Amino acid sequence: MEKIRVELGERSYDICMGSDILDGLGDNLKIFGLSPKICLVSNPTVFPLYGERVSDSVKKAGFDLLTVIIPDGEGYKDLLRVQHIYNELLKYKLDRSSALIALGGGVIGDITGFAASTYMRGISYIQVPTTMLAHVDSSVGGKTGVNHKLGKNMIGTFWQPRLVWIDIETLKTLPGKELLAGLAEVIKYGVIWDKELFDFLDDKRDKIFNLDRKAVMHIIKRSCEIKAEVVSKDEKEAGLRSILNYGHTIGHAIETVTGYKKYLHGEAVAIGMFLEAMLAHKLNFINKDKALRIKRLIDSYGLPSEMPADIDADSLLSSMQLDKKAVAGELKFIMPEKIGSVRIHKGITEKVIRDILKS
Ligand SMILES: NC(=O)c1ccc[n+]([C@@H]2O[C@H](COP(=O)([O-])OP(=O)(O)OC[C@H]3O[C@@H](n4cnc5c(N)ncnc54)[C@H](O)[C@@H]3O)[C@@H](O)[C@H]2O)c1
Image 1 (cartoon, protein in one colour):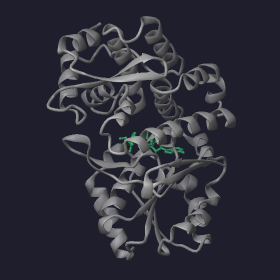
Image 2: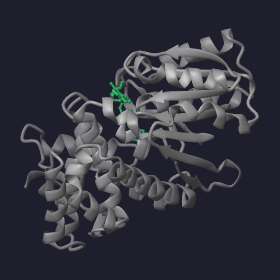
Image 3: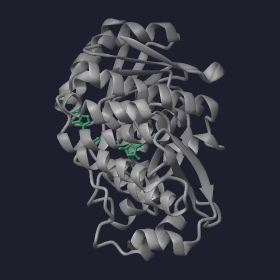
């Protein structure tokens, strides 16, 4: 098993990753001094696959377990489901030393983290992520939240988990499209931070597609190390952490104008990464060969990279200006300078952005 420490003073925690480690979770909870009542939150897709193993492990370690199942899907990441979790926690008399376990992808992780951060002014939670996106991104860093009907992830908190427990074997049941969407975030880490990771993704594509244990462990470990380092330096996104948003300014806008139906998050980010690389090229931050190298890697992972023909540039631009990452309508972009390094750039004129979206 590999271990990475997220250094955040008294809120520091370990990310443990390995193959076939779900049964070991319970014993590893004992050190936290939790009350015996624990609640597992999952959904009807993931629970039948891994719920029993996680529940048995937690019960064997002496905990008394409540299970809450919420429906599967982004549409259920809302305050209604949080209310349902609170109801169950109160009925079952979970106290301030109890903990929640999130077993699932980013949706379950975000909603469980949010419920944990607000129940009795904040209790512990443990992330047991089961998608590639959750392994490499959403389970680490403590951003929790739910959607509001007027915007995605608009209600949320920063609340760090006590432990992240990643079993890479869970990827074996993940639909291929979801795996690829998660890999878009790994490509992102390569571009923003680590050329070796980028080259590894290029060299070992087949092994990664075949879920070769060594190759998959390597990319998840590197991704978590990078996220841990960035978050340790800037927990609440005052500066550096925003580099993790590379590809997301345009990506989020694509998701919004297509009503979250046409693209998975990672697919929209993949398009955003190439368009933002072309924007960086237009501003002379990166040469064209390197921008096109980013596109080739995205394409080779079966992810989209071109601006969809049916999306109008003006609606994308207005959506970007409304995004919570924009301050007073001013857009901030993460611009690659070379593979493995980016800069944060503001003040790009609407015309330049529109030209890229239209070209
Ligand atoms: N908190 C953060 O820092 C952060 C970062 C990125 C994304 N997010 C959030 O993450 C969410 C997206 O997460 P996601 O991509 O994991 O989607 P998801 O949680 O919806 O999971 C995708 C699908 O895969 C299923 N699934 C999960 N694990 C499985 C497995 N092992 N086998 C078979 N099916 C499985 C799920 O039930 C779901 O149907 C979004 O809500 C996004 O806002 C949060």
